[in-house]
Length: 267
Image (cartoon, rainbow, N blue to C red; front, top):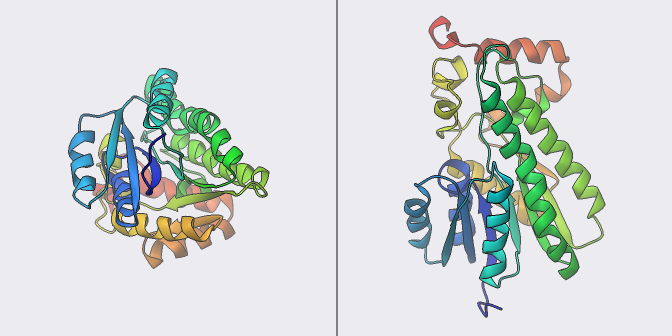
């Protein structure tokens, strides 16, 4: 068993964007970090986190595969550390008309956004519950609150994550382990490039949230034991409130206008 007196946070999707900023936030607040991601940028990201004066281990694993999830769990076991925070943040998007988008891309999205979240939680939560303490952060999206035309599978995956987190929260309410759902809006990361949405109104917008701001708000909500946090500027929080109140056909039309291919040039 590792004898470090510092707490230990496991962060998936930690090579860039919100995941990297979450890792930094944990580092600033006295946590050692296990950073998990599948891409080659992971080591450079880890150096940025180490510069904040913490110990950072890395695990390069493709969480869209069962083998990758098992590799991440083995890295936790090999560390000899108790997991104080589990941040299940890894995720991708796919933009475009459902009838035209590649099936393989969407099945990979489901594997990463949905299956890996369930799989890694199943592997790591029992020890936290047995110990009677710990915090879980599950990154869903404001997209979980409404229909998402042209991101049809992505929005559904994030609705799953939100429901999964809420249900898990209830099951674990008397265990000492808290579950917080993170619901960011459009954020200034490489998400839209990877999703093929550069030509959409939402992808081209310059009014995206700062991922560092999202991570700070997520950290505060997690430490407070909040059930969920719509993170980002006030405009995003307002959007989250409105989305819960509006009829589904209205939110669908609104999202479709922003996410439709080529919508950036029609603005």
